[in-house]
Image (cartoon, rainbow, N blue to C red; front, side, top):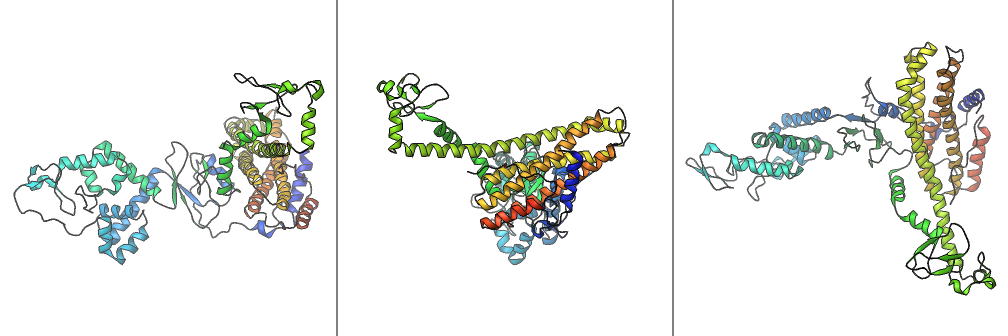
Length: 550
């Protein structure tokens, strides 16, 4: 990788009219996300890596909500419903909980048939039992007699004492989130228990639990919001509809897919990710390995692996059966006349007669399947490891190298942001490249596979070039005794490589998400497309053959 030549070649690629690397020639891949998408700008000055990495993807189409943000949105919705419908906030909360925090749904249903809604949610306009004019009142739970002022009731007017209310509310809170839809203690009574009753009778500890359930319901019942899946993270993500990019990044540095909550995985769809994760954790590959690399003992059927030595096999105790590895017959029938210790004439003759064809075919198929899976998995895992290493290198650069470089080159740290930009781009590209291996594993079309392998190889070459520049060439200036005249050339080169790599990976993601639509379904169309791309790319490196056909 001659640095100057590579840079010139990369610039030539960027200016090529029909070149995929620059995105300049293909209308399918050159369309931007558009300016009409809502821009949820939440990035602050003290943002962390997750938000910066997200900015290297497409336009941000989500908002990260902290607990105070969620509570404010929740109270705004309650206040709006309370004001429009002229009801108490406690009653507004009951309505919103019933209609899954959809303000528009509450308004539509209420104004369509208020009486029906009141009956359905338990906000009654009039009591269902008569209230005695005087004398003592009997509690409906403990059946003790109390003065009227010692009795509390909901809109239904069923009488219960404060002690029973306290026990009833405390028990339901400790039973879980079901307390949010609590009804009157009277069996079959539809009257709902509002927040005012929880405020009045719940202990401090129970109130904390109740309001935690209440807050979580705002996210869990809302189709536009989800909790960040990172352990211990209390943030939520509000997602803007109308986009196919589901990758989001929380302030806790967790990047994930809003649709399936697995880690961010563009350009691979959620179904493919589910298949890949299930395959990685399944026992199927273990069985494939056993089938490909072992044979069952003819006596006890225990799998045996032969890693070296002659054909004379002895099963482990307590079986201890001795047999021939090739024909699986008893070793007592073998000797010099059957081929000795390193061959088996019986096996060769039986094989010619086709007696072992089915077993050998199954073993060969299992071996090929295992080799193909291992090929893709190792590269998938390798890019994940490289991404983690790049994250560590970014932290080290920020904490140590930038300050040192600033002192040596007499350059303010604010003018060294191009280095962190390069690292952030590497981190994002490693993530994309990692998931292209899952994409390639499930790509069935051979014509498209050829073009895909070419694009994947180009992506690896471009990323390695950028990675080498920021990792190796930067060390020259970090170890210098003083300012270097070549530092500005390094800045220009690294900035250019970062920009070109970003453009290429953005186009790669679009191409894969479009199902490589530019590739004809015929073999001739595929060859023409691939050869055309190869001939028009200047300074590029041909694909490394990074995918393996099954």
